[in-house]
Image (cartoon, rainbow, N blue to C red):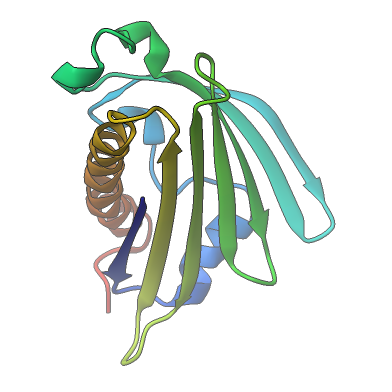
Length: 169
């Protein structure tokens, strides 16, 4: 199942991508409402790319049809991401601690100058749960949580950039 979303920010793209190129976060991601834990495991630069790995624990409502298979403990995973300076983009993948052969999750996040000024972030998420019958239900539930987090992250980015740079021009 594929999800896409776009967010606009009123600051020039260079201000935002300079933070990302330095390896920084635009806001404290562990403050998202459904995040219980986010721990940095790896952080290294190789040329024009930054490689990061995090361990995460999140919480969310598991669809009733999937509760016999998935438990709250199954909402832990590792995220591996690569920031590319030339593309101004992240490519990320998630490896669940449980059901590694069942769940596939990839995302991209591209940052570019928005028409008319400011910055646009384009996010694409691909989720696949290879369990007959309940797979699509779980994909939708995961996607809905990820979309909600991504929308909330946009609000937190605005707050963080306002604190750093003042209101957008």
